[in-house]
Image 1 (cartoon, one colour):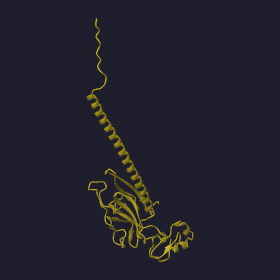
Image 2 (tube, rainbow, N blue to C red):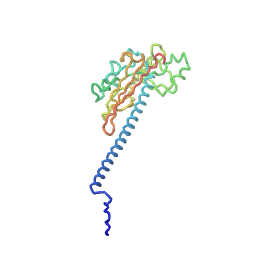
Image 3 (cartoon, rainbow, N blue to C red):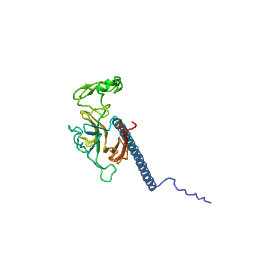
Image 4 (cartoon, one colour):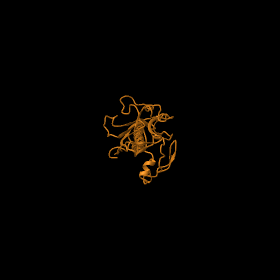
Length: 269
């Protein structure tokens, strides 16, 4: 009697099955790599935008602190703060054309939130106390302005707490006779396009001092209650900065920061 052996199919994969498996692995690997790359790019973009927003907020805080020292006053027939529309101050505010400039180049179009004219600001800071006021209060020289650096005008140089010489043409006294304003060195914030084509918010003084406060600003506006239909408090200024930040992949990220600041001679300040 002859026994028949059972036939077994050989274990393993055919060439076709292996090819299909390899293709599936390649597709899966590609999808995973794309996902990881996308996550990496999103994280990078998020970090860039977060860093830019932090820098924008710091710039805004510096601007607010600067404006808090200014006031709403009329000196020599000119009202401060004065608002500069598209780089051109009003008559009498910028005889030396220090604050005048060509309007910044824009990419926003009608309908965009950051579309519209730029409105800069021109203001003055308090200066030192005049001699006649210090004579009534000798201790005033020690209290104001304590620690202020040396101040230079066209006619004199003053140290911290030093009295102003009577008749110095670079200072005017406000109507109440107590606050002295340095009209010889007006200050402005305006948006300009630099040599690299980047829009920069610039702080500039009449004496020539200049500082870049923020870059990649599409639009900057400084407004008071009259310009906004009294939607902000009297004797206050609202600052709005609209940013357009390009990343390394050419994508534009938009965001804005804003603040409202009361001037030093406002009610309750």
